[in-house]
Amino acid sequence: MNVEIITIGDELLIGQVIDTNSAWMGQHLGEEGFRVIWRTTVGDVEEDMLEAFNRAMQRADIVLITGGIGPTNDDITKKTLCKYFGCGMHFSDEVFDNIQRIFNRSNRKMNELTRNQALVPDNCTIIQNRVGTAPCTWFERDNRILVSMPGVPSEMKWLMSNEITPRLKTRFNQNLFIRHQTCWVAGFTESALAIKLTDFEKQLPSFIKLAYLPQPGLIRLRLSAYTENEEEAIVSISEQREKLHAILAGNILVEEDKAIEVQIGDILRDKQLHMGTAESCTGGHIAGMITSVAGSSDYFVGGIISYSNEVKHRILGVSEESLSTYGAVSKEVVEQMVVGATRVLGCDCAVATSGIAGPGGGTEAKPVGTVWIAAKLKEKVVSECFHFGTIRDQNIQRASNTALLMLLKVLEEE
Image 1 (cartoon, rainbow, N blue to C red):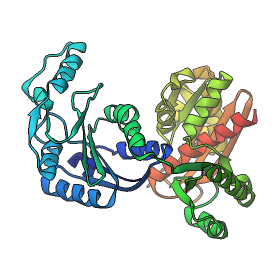
Image 2: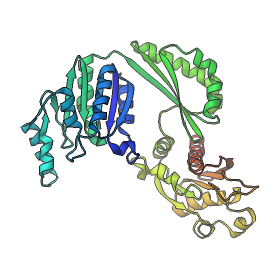
Image 3: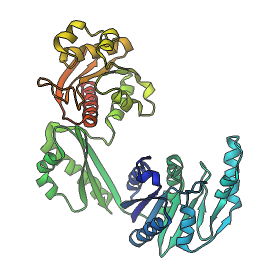
Image 4: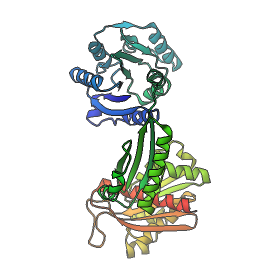
């Protein structure tokens, strides 16, 4: 079954809010055997929404909508769906009871706008939202399904997992098996990797696709099999994975579809180790990546943003002689930074960065993009100099990714 996801809201179009709903839904639906073919984002404009609904209902078997069903005047999805399906609205006592239950549970007083969320379209199936006040609506036309859900990620996820996906699987009796194999690759640009894998891609079976998912300093390669034969999907993906290994040798770092910070967290927790950071040019970005993972307090103790030489010396114990002789961007300084971090923070391992993120500050000897990175685990310290480029944001991201990769390698070698 082909699926189209429609996300609604001006805030998505202007970049004020990042659309995480589509990403989660795409991954979730793939795991359940549904194939997302289109993703559309549309603003809070009735004409544009009607056009998007009509186009989606012509080309997809299932249309999943999030957003625009809240209590305020700019939430017009429900009204627009009524116009699209040619129906009116009625007050649902069942929905109202659910809203009251949620308000009573949090000891809040309901207002008229919230009460109006119990107004629902006439010709749809109402699915109760047990974690929010806006109900989910399920429409059917010409053997196609359109489902409208709240845009709040936690509410959408609950509805998808507990209500929508089970109903869709029952309705369509899905027999498409989708299997993914992801690996993280370093040492290539996207175009260089594509050239390297030209012959490999040509020999792929028609039901297997290869996707390149680049980020600064790293590329995620994803093999995806779409077939009605589960064993065929599993065997074929395994065969292609072995071929990739033979071609890319040591450039494959990890074979899990997990962010590096998640992989590091899993290892630290498993080995009962604690880590910290000492960051100069990355300005706390590495610590931010680590602490973005739920449960990171189990293994992350803290970070020091030692942007100035004074902080490097006074807090981390970097010698003034090293700073004056070699400069802040040097092997000597970054190694003293990482040692100081483990001492001051009382942790087992750490990473440290010192470099020139840009766009200014470079010299002939140390141009913009020069970054020294060190990683330490217990008594072992490794460091390396990198030359990333001239774009500040990319330099920070690449330095952060590279630092975590260095730590990951040290952890795996222990």
